[in-house]
Amino acid sequence: MDPAKNKFPKEISSIHLVAVCGTGMGALAGMLMDEGFSVTGSDANVYPPMSTFLEEKGIRVINGYDAKNLAHNPDLVIIGNAISKDNPEAVAVMQKGLYYCSFPQAMNRFFCDWRAPVLVTGTHGKTTTSAIVAWILAAVGLDPSFMIGGILHNFKSNHKVGAGPHIVIEGDEYDTAFFDKRPKFVHYTPQHTILTSVEFDHADIYADFDAVKSAFSTLVQNLPEQSLLVACGDDPIVSELARKAPCWVATYGSNPDNVWQLASYKTEPPWSHFEVKLRGEAFASFKTRLMGAYNLKNALAAIAVAHDLRIPEEGIAAALETFEGVARRQTVRWVVNDITLMDDFAHHPTAVQETLKGVRPFFPKGRVIAIFEPRTNTSRRNIFQDIYPKAFEQADIIIAAKPPLLEKIPPEHRFSSSKLVDDLLNQGKKAYYMESADQIAGFAASIAKPGDLILVMSNGGFDNIHHKIHKALEDLHKK
Image (cartoon, rainbow, N blue to C red; front, side, top):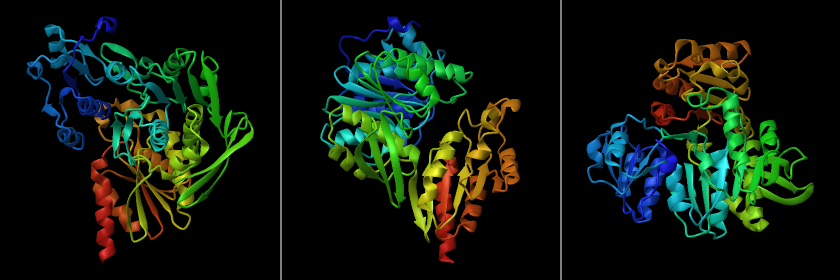
């Protein structure tokens, strides 16, 4: 399976996507449909919301993988990275001699051929930073295209095909496909790259931190010479990698040594106000509804890119004020009896810690009740077992759920939520271990008081826990 031999046909009208219900693949299918292609797809797990989204776009999705799904001999087959080489559709592609490619190859072929990519990478903050860049470009009339791993509230979508000269891509470090094990982000030729942070994650792909660091090093060292790397100078690993970049580099962060500095900030709910310096001199003041210093750094990275694109400060400021955020990133789902229920994607200990630090000042009169589900391939392992307890320092009450699908993790490598709770109790925290979403929902609703924040942190559906908590709160409020 040599990707170098993988060519595109001269004419393409029909495209089939294998594993179409993944977040990125589904968005790609939608973009291709918007471009006028005849699009079909298949997946082993066809269920809402992606199945509904694809249906609304008029894309026929087949439940299950089968060689018969390729009986119409599409001009091109895009194979997702969730597909193994022995998948029946992958086997059929090779046997039939059909043209095939990976997700990033398709992005390059159909959407980056004449647009200048803004590539946003890093362990944390990719989605929010990508969304801010896309919204700034849109707000000043540049009509960007974008492909982002979360629903942007301003657009009610995670993708868009615009007529403007820029495309914003959230570039992740997952492998490309079974026939190309390189990280997805190395396939792009960005005009601007943002690197937010480098930490260990994705334990199902990377053996250790050195492997993760090597992936980002490959990205940085192969950036185009005439491009700009906007690198978080507060992160020592990012700083180390940035020194090897062959292109222009602009650092950002709270440290005064950075080119772009988050000089100061203050919280006045619902606003965060912050001052920015450029090379030590006052640049501008901004305000946003984003919570936490880490989100203001995400905004700072976006400001650096926007400034390099000659977008004036007043345009950037107006965009930041009207930025509505990203679904599942500090998203307020409901407020019942002055109890706020918030949904967040945090799962890595750094993300958990920074999210809690960020939301804490916005609820000064109440408590933060943190509900945590370790669901990712990394968090279900005991890699960060001894690190997680410190991450919950800003929470008043912690409820840890039993990790799902633990049977897929070797016993000696499994994360223990009950141990996390024991460690938190030893630190003097109020902490509880519970196995079911129903149990957690009922308990959280019963202890919540007006002014409190119930913060649910999980990268999955968590057995519809948000609706269960909402119902429990409503039922209690009626009594």
